[in-house]
Length: 465
Image (spheres, rainbow, N blue to C red):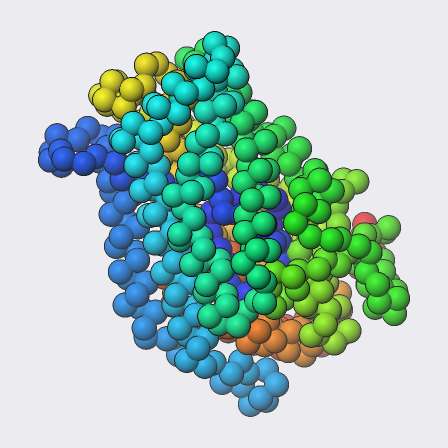
């Protein structure tokens, strides 16, 4: 639902922007084996604190998730999620895996750095060519492959074993692994060029963090534009909505919402999952609303219209552009503090790691370690902003469709279908939920009817374009 920017946090059952199955490039902290804490300078202490935060939050998740939050019961069974022990186990496991996965990635980056693997990969690239930019590209390709191999065990368990354990997919291992290889190829092609440019800027500019931050603006916009037409089709087949009756209803709803010439696609996500979702993606000529075929197969037309009203809300209220702006503001802090910690770390440990200078490709794990730790600590900020936008889109859908009950039953279906507990612990919601919990969305969907009280709409203004 949110734009195509890499997401730091994962929401619950999402009526919204799909996040690519390929695992995020990296998050990160840990790193200093064999030294006593008082000897660490501020840079290392910061990273150790981040690692400790990951461990602590994992323990908190395990203990708190074991005590499910009290659930609000509805008088009408249609609007009540039938919460099972299986749903609670699955939700608890996904929450734990989120924090464990973050720590695992931190550890992978640390291993690549302190074992000398990073230095050896740079040296191998230098034996192929003497051109620094090409050396950086080759190094990043090798680095991407190495980290993917080190992260494969957890990726296999989290993304393949767990979904099969809870009957959320019928995807074969060959198909799953093929998607992983496709994602790896995309990461190498894009990452090699972008990463080499970033390292070039770090070598040549004193205040390189400003250059990198400014460079993210055109890069992110470009990625948002090309993802729907170049990247997403690598993994799935997209086609215009096939149901002619539903398509006309959606076009009528889009016109009512203020969207002319809207593009609505369906995608064959059933090859990868049994769960349901819909999302807005792209900007300008590539902007579109996408529905998973699983959603079309399991929901009534009114439920689909209510869900699509939510997606149209993102479009009309320009949430993609607003989220881009918000993330660019947040990224200022990531780049600045990465800049403040990167070089002191190199001065103290660079010779031990085999790093010769600022912008050396072998220093990339250290830079990612810092940036990922900062990004992890900013997760609640990004999650909170996203939840606000999602709630506004829920309001928009109800105002433009008046389909309160179908919207509520759609949420019930998505919660039960995805085996997710609709009532997460407040800490989990605060840290990582990019959407309001289902236990909050269902009662809101049933109760929000300003038109019955003669009150004006808050999100959708009829007649505005």
